[in-house]
Length: 256
Length: 169
View 1 (cartoon, rainbow over the protein chains, first blue to last red):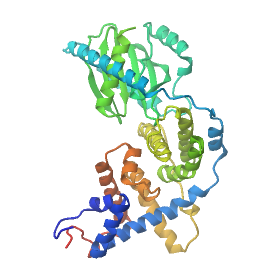
View 2: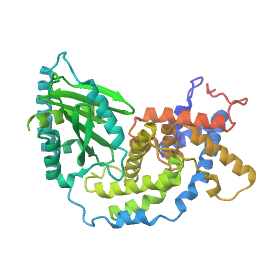
View 3: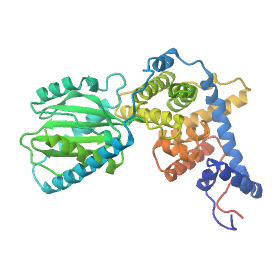
View 4: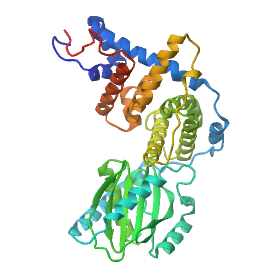
């Protein structure tokens, strides 16, 4: 470290919580500079306090239900599809995504839209994504029934799109109230437990729209109206990821 | 060691972290339970990127964020819990100091608390913690700096002479 260069807490933290080499460099710095040494000693005291406070919690006996959750597991996990199959699926979706995006762009333009659709979709997301016991009414394992039921309730054929190439699988769906009647809410989850929802509501008289972005209450999403249905894809993901999944949803929904 | 064994080996760390983060026993137990159920159900889809521990913490943190969203919408009342009593016996002064730290950690914004506990309590490196929290390392570093600064301030360790750290001579 050369003379007179400001060193911020961030720089020290990067070294302190870095790899072994970074920590060795930090020790050398602290040896040369008592100010740094005092700051590190403070942080050591903070860490020691946290370990004293919370460390014993990890030594308490593990509740039986935690172990039951593991014991109930199917001992032979299903096979992961081979990589070439996933790559092929990704390429196919890229092509579809491109075509869908291009098609959506054709619909750019003003008109009587349904902004309340986005608000309802965000609200439905916030309500049901927190659910542990009953995130959906009909699970994906019963997809045939889900398709029949949602299509019947909405008066419009609805097939849940497939987002596997984005790492999201269908959890299931439910019916939710919408200002225009009834909407379907389909929920998906990835392997780290992130959830997204696809909200679909028949909107007979609304003007078709391009993709629009909406945000609120820690969630965001894209919504659009096309071919008599309004849709919103909502999640807590980077905007570009949401857009890509929304394009995939758009393309798969217009084919039904 | 099977994946299920590896998951089981992480349970004590998940419980410790969940309790410190959620500050409520029942809520923490539910978080861990939900995390385990999701891990078991989703393990065939997990692609084995990185260590099992990081994957499990990520699931737990995603669940915690979902719960926070519910809490913001006014759906949940979270009672506070006296956790200091559960810690090992020490003298009165130690307990008071710990109580102060516990309270200060409780007042941190949840994103700062989640970040600080990952590195300070669980020993994650910045890279591991950034992956578990799904945020860039730079964002994580400034969160940690703010969290540690707040702890110093609230436990009366800030502001003394010789405490300025602007320039290295």
